[in-house]
Length: 478
Image 1 (tube, rainbow, N blue to C red):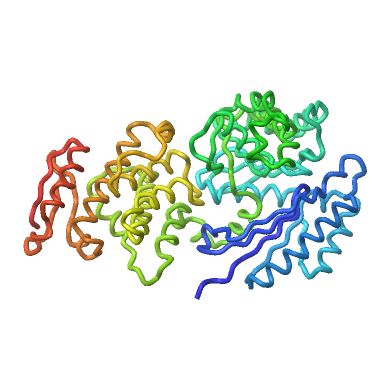
Image 2 (cartoon, rainbow, N blue to C red):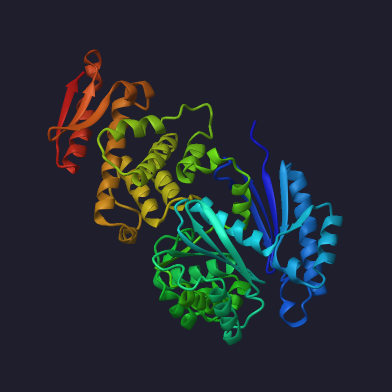
């Protein structure tokens, strides 16, 4: 029986959102995601209170969300509110109204909000090392993330609904707060991680402006100097952006760009990276036991996907173990290779004419975390080669990898292809045979009594793999 889903209702200063998650605990998959731009924080800068119109719009959305969650049979529903409910003079009244709807609403403190945002970054980017900045409608949170820990959280009343695009006063408030917390230059040699819809929209604008070939926002990288450039080019009425960015997000983009440029100036990061994970994912991650937290999110998600049909025996792990004898890959590449093997098993269950398309699409565009654009392209190249295609669907994708990365991925693909022909997709064949590099040759060891497993098709694929590795192919009985 499938596990019941988990729901999170996030009541922010800009939007009210319901996300319902299912699947593996380490990387829960969003099966429903809906937001309403209620603008609870829109009146804070002028009156310090939530406007009646914003309150009514939020409550109407929450009534719908409550009904949906009940119908979905969610095992757990988390309801959290952030800066608007926390800072508004009538925030307590809003929370009381929410609780009367039958929703147990928890107002996060500024420190809790920052810490959960940091844990969200760590959940999606386990080796994160730097400062996470979560920009919402009512506040900007900063938290240090390193070694799997989120520490030294701080918050500033600098959300996109509270500042204007020029933001001279806002820049001064940010500068004083960062310096007062001793964070000036704290991202030197490290990364600034961007959390929140306003900054994700800003990154989407950058993707459009640079004609980026992979439409995946998670772990999208930007050079620090790009922040000042974005501030110059962002214009809500620019036709380049209006087709892809929601009007409300476009309207707040100049303020988001101004705050990013000011933050980069103070923190001096070596690079900027977007995180699709934030408070909601941090909340789920905070509830996990240490053993589950330690799992690699990429391979955990790939394994969950490849074993969704429990009637089909999983081959991915055995396939990766067989390939491992021919390669001396570091741990980071082994994780990408294992994920590719798990997806190869999944694609083998598809119509033969569409296996390559399905595998490459999954590698490039599925909801993976714990992997950057380079890793996605390597998975796609390995799977494209494994199913008989050497070329990627878009030649621009090759520019996201080094040539040696693409070569290694092709070699994995050729190894997967060899293993598939040798084994016929049967685990026991992979367990009884062995691939290894020895004395300048790529050797395939096969039990003496099962030598007939090696036919001309196997030899052709082994020879092509060996040639790509500049080795000689050899079949040896064992």
